[in-house]
Length: 115
Image (cartoon, rainbow, N blue to C red; front, side, top):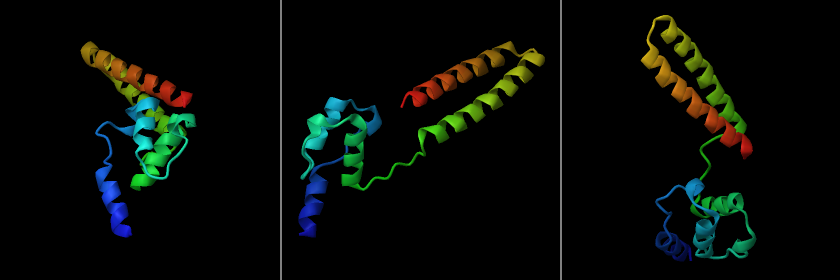
Protein backbone atom coordinates (compact mmCIF):
# COMPACT_ATOMS: atom_id res chain seq x y z
CA UNK A 1 0.00 0.00 0.00
CA UNK A 2 2.92 2.35 0.64
CA UNK A 3 3.95 1.88 -2.98
CA UNK A 4 0.53 3.12 -4.14
CA UNK A 5 1.06 6.37 -2.20
CA UNK A 6 4.44 6.84 -3.82
CA UNK A 7 3.06 6.42 -7.31
CA UNK A 8 0.30 8.94 -6.61
CA UNK A 9 2.85 11.44 -5.29
CA UNK A 10 5.11 10.83 -8.26
CA UNK A 11 2.24 11.39 -10.68
CA UNK A 12 1.30 14.65 -8.97
CA UNK A 13 4.36 16.90 -9.09
CA UNK A 14 4.83 20.30 -7.59
CA UNK A 15 4.33 23.15 -10.04
CA UNK A 16 7.41 25.00 -11.20
CA UNK A 17 5.96 28.27 -9.98
CA UNK A 18 6.43 28.91 -6.21
CA UNK A 19 3.24 28.24 -4.25
CA UNK A 20 3.17 31.76 -2.79
CA UNK A 21 3.24 33.25 -6.30
CA UNK A 22 0.31 31.13 -7.53
CA UNK A 23 -3.20 32.58 -7.50
CA UNK A 24 -5.95 31.07 -5.38
CA UNK A 25 -7.76 29.58 -8.42
CA UNK A 26 -4.50 27.94 -9.56
CA UNK A 27 -3.97 26.51 -6.09
CA UNK A 28 -7.55 25.21 -5.99
CA UNK A 29 -7.12 23.40 -9.30
CA UNK A 30 -3.90 21.87 -8.04
CA UNK A 31 -5.40 20.92 -4.65
CA UNK A 32 -8.31 19.12 -6.37
CA UNK A 33 -5.83 16.60 -7.73
CA UNK A 34 -4.62 15.65 -4.24
CA UNK A 35 -6.42 12.51 -3.05
CA UNK A 36 -8.55 12.94 0.06
CA UNK A 37 -8.85 16.71 -0.16
CA UNK A 38 -12.38 18.06 -0.37
CA UNK A 39 -13.98 21.49 -0.21
CA UNK A 40 -11.16 23.36 -1.91
CA UNK A 41 -13.51 26.05 -3.25
CA UNK A 42 -14.23 27.28 0.26
CA UNK A 43 -10.54 27.42 1.26
CA UNK A 44 -8.39 30.52 1.36
CA UNK A 45 -4.98 30.73 -0.27
CA UNK A 46 -3.02 30.20 2.98
CA UNK A 47 -4.99 27.04 3.77
CA UNK A 48 -4.52 25.68 0.26
CA UNK A 49 -0.76 26.27 0.46
CA UNK A 50 -0.57 24.49 3.82
CA UNK A 51 -2.49 21.47 2.45
CA UNK A 52 -0.21 21.23 -0.59
CA UNK A 53 2.90 21.55 1.60
CA UNK A 54 1.58 18.90 3.98
CA UNK A 55 0.88 16.50 1.09
CA UNK A 56 4.40 16.84 -0.27
CA UNK A 57 6.06 17.00 3.17
CA UNK A 58 7.43 20.50 2.64
CA UNK A 59 8.16 22.61 5.69
CA UNK A 60 8.02 26.37 5.48
CA UNK A 61 11.58 27.63 5.43
CA UNK A 62 10.93 31.21 6.46
CA UNK A 63 10.06 32.39 9.92
CA UNK A 64 7.04 34.46 10.70
CA UNK A 65 6.38 37.66 8.74
CA UNK A 66 7.36 39.67 11.82
CA UNK A 67 10.80 38.05 11.85
CA UNK A 68 11.22 38.81 8.17
CA UNK A 69 10.18 42.45 8.73
CA UNK A 70 12.74 42.79 11.54
CA UNK A 71 15.46 41.40 9.29
CA UNK A 72 14.53 43.75 6.46
CA UNK A 73 14.44 46.79 8.75
CA UNK A 74 17.90 45.94 10.08
CA UNK A 75 19.13 45.82 6.47
CA UNK A 76 17.47 49.21 5.81
CA UNK A 77 19.33 50.75 8.79
CA UNK A 78 22.63 49.42 7.44
CA UNK A 79 21.89 50.81 3.98
CA UNK A 80 20.95 54.22 5.41
CA UNK A 81 24.37 54.42 7.08
CA UNK A 82 26.05 53.40 3.82
CA UNK A 83 24.05 56.06 1.94
CA UNK A 84 25.15 58.77 4.38
CA UNK A 85 28.77 57.68 3.98
CA UNK A 86 28.45 57.77 0.19
CA UNK A 87 26.97 61.27 0.31
CA UNK A 88 29.76 62.48 2.62
CA UNK A 89 32.33 61.14 0.16
CA UNK A 90 30.54 62.78 -2.78
CA UNK A 91 29.50 59.49 -4.42
CA UNK A 92 26.05 60.55 -5.56
CA UNK A 93 25.55 57.66 -7.99
CA UNK A 94 26.27 55.10 -5.27
CA UNK A 95 23.94 56.96 -2.89
CA UNK A 96 21.19 56.89 -5.52
CA UNK A 97 21.56 53.12 -5.97
CA UNK A 98 21.42 52.61 -2.21
CA UNK A 99 18.35 54.84 -1.97
CA UNK A 100 16.56 52.63 -4.52
CA UNK A 101 17.46 49.49 -2.57
CA UNK A 102 16.11 51.08 0.61
CA UNK A 103 12.89 51.95 -1.20
CA UNK A 104 12.44 48.38 -2.43
CA UNK A 105 13.05 46.95 1.04
CA UNK A 106 10.50 49.34 2.54
CA UNK A 107 7.93 48.18 -0.01
CA UNK A 108 8.64 44.57 0.96
CA UNK A 109 8.11 45.35 4.65
CA UNK A 110 4.76 46.99 3.84
CA UNK A 111 3.64 43.94 1.85
CA UNK A 112 4.66 41.62 4.68
CA UNK A 113 2.79 43.75 7.21
CA UNK A 114 -0.45 43.25 5.25
CA UNK A 115 -0.30 39.45 5.68
